[in-house]
Amino acid sequence: MPSAEIITIGTEILLGEIVDTNTRYIARALRGLGVDLYRTITIGDNVERIATAINHSMQRAEIVITTGGLGPTVDDPTREAVAKAVGVETEFREDLWEQVVAVITRYGRKPSENQKRQAYVPRGAIGVPNPVGTAPCFIVETERNAVISLPGVPNEMEYILHESIIPYLQKRFALNEIIKIRILHCAGLGEGMIDEKIADLETLSNPTVGLAAHTGVVDIRIAAKAKNEADASEMIAKIEADVRERLGDVIFGADEDRLEDVVLKTVAKRGWTLTAIESGLDGLLAQKIPHTASFSDLSPNSLMDTLRKARAEANADAALGVAVSMEQRAAEMALITPAGEKTHRITYGGPPRSLPRWSVNLALDWLRRRALEGD
Image (cartoon, rainbow, N blue to C red; front, top):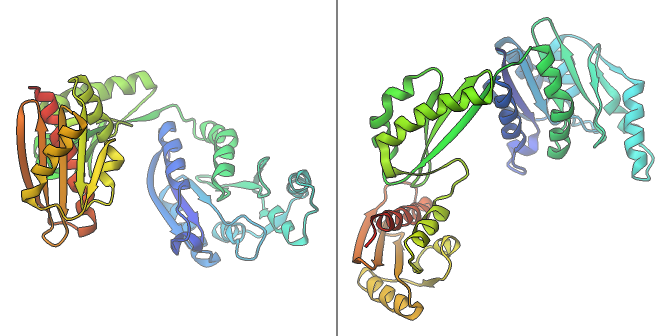
């Protein structure tokens, strides 16, 4: 099975002016083909550095995919960099120029002279049409490698990837496997404690199991490589059942599930109506729970009293309150359900800016667990 590396090209990415979304999109496409992705790299608009990165990637992986740097200006260096990496010159392709002219003409414009740069590719490269943009793409083949250069514009890249590149890769490398991913979302236990419970599963080679910690949430990734989706699903299902048996209701959802959505569904399933209050969160809890009132500087002593009033005014069955103190790096929580009233204080040792999100996620999970317990 071939391996791949992705190189995104653009100084604007390095400077933080734009966010690279192409790498994630290509990575997921490669995963669906069963291709192992070894490395992703971002390089500025410099021919020498790009050529060096491509050359190194070619030594490590059979498939090298670049995005960006195919425009008409002098700071679009990908064509020259790929040519340098494989030891050839660039050459003008009349057929590619005709494609550029055709696309520009559709917009009622005439191509400028500098746009001819886009019809130059490394000598011997396979031209790849771009019917949705003005930057033709290309593939440079060696005995071992395929270096594929795609536009940086996301919608152009995505179209060409599916229409031309995926079929090419399937044929060139006889791809007949897939990689399927299942993500289990956890709350209520930290990454270290979850690791202790499933450490043996993390040593498996297929499926593989890995952890990713977020703010108050930990994801467990199960990845299986198989000949078809049904086989991959069966492999994942066995591991998932084992993980669920070990962790129980620490797992609140999977894949696209969000904690707040799961909480609201769990509360609704209990037949409870819900209201909430927050302080020091800048509306973060209000984004998760409808009918959340915001207050300034609620003290620990006043949080429960204020929550009782809010619950009474809303005539709600349940009420959740969260008040954050950035100075103390702490959060006070209060919860009222038909089963009674509870308070909880947590302190936080991480980055201060993460305290609000961490507090909200822990409070939401607290509410979820109380709703699961019932009256």
